[in-house]
Amino acid sequence: MAAVVRGIQTRAGHIGYRDQLDRARRFLERIRRGYEGIEDMDDVEFQDMVWSFFQHCWHVKDWLHHDPWHRPPKKLQPSPWRTNRTP
Image (cartoon, rainbow, N blue to C red; front, side, top):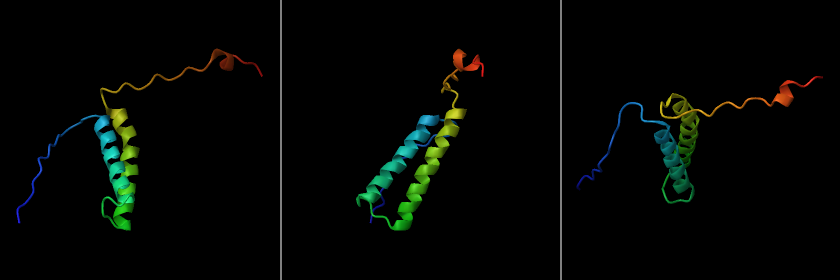
């Protein structure tokens, strides 16, 4: 039996929020394949995939916050009519 080896590219260091977003999308695709029966997984494996997907989604916000190339949106200023209103 011959071993099958695929080329794996790894990167170290801060690589940006888009990589974390892509990771979440890959987990979503794994969930879809498991749900549709394309990929054989038992209930525990499926539940692990769902939990992992939501954990990766949750961490996208952290990656956004720490990504030096991402500019956060400007905060909206309140309208003058709301701040100068008298009761």
